[in-house]
Length: 346
Image (cartoon, rainbow, N blue to C red):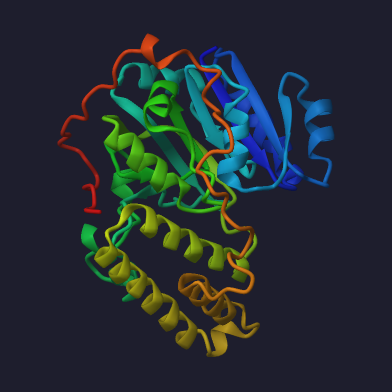
């Protein structure tokens, strides 16, 4: 099998019909191994998949987060490539056959993302730079609204021209993240201590450290119904908590303190600025206040969703894969003239 697609659904049945229909319509002749992980849904997810897409498999899972659910799907796959795909997406252009051909021609690429647009067709900035204290400070000071946006001042790559061409990047968002199985064997699966957010930069950082490249490939375009729920304070708090986890995992003590301080400034300024007319329902201010609590560790209960497990993996989701000894060693990452963003210091 060449491609496995893992879709985690937590009461996302309303999106699955369009998502899975577009997946099969854009196979391009590739045999697909589709696994839908049902994260304790109560909206008929399982029934929809079984009745409408009998060739797909449904895996039951408790709702312990994005990383946990995707790892449960990985346990059931044996394909050369695995795609982590959000249920609120649709494939618009390109085929999986074309995408795999591009990846096969680039054996040094371990993880890749593709072009994404929003519900109204607007370009979504899915090419990212690794988090660090300087970028957090730049974002706190509104760097995305500066006339010039230096790479040190923000994580998101906002230049539209970067999305028209292929290039290396630090990490790509998990709504569409395709990985070579050898790269996952070298770097490890997703860290299940991240309930939601920051599992993508964490994985891509480990993939890069294992000698693989992370690449943006505009060979395929998908629609992602991102931000479909508006401002959700609990989700904002969860992102802040995940960033705190990421900093504890990857940063030195000094860098971590600077990073968390910059994040605190960001949420503090947002709380102050959202007190005006633009926040009539109070959700923006509440989100910032709850994010500050999650950052400081004073959230009651802590964290916003569920306590992180004691270990990064509850089982070994890659054991179904071929033995690492039978696989070729990972290639060394090569410098690229069209690299869209440099690796941040950690």
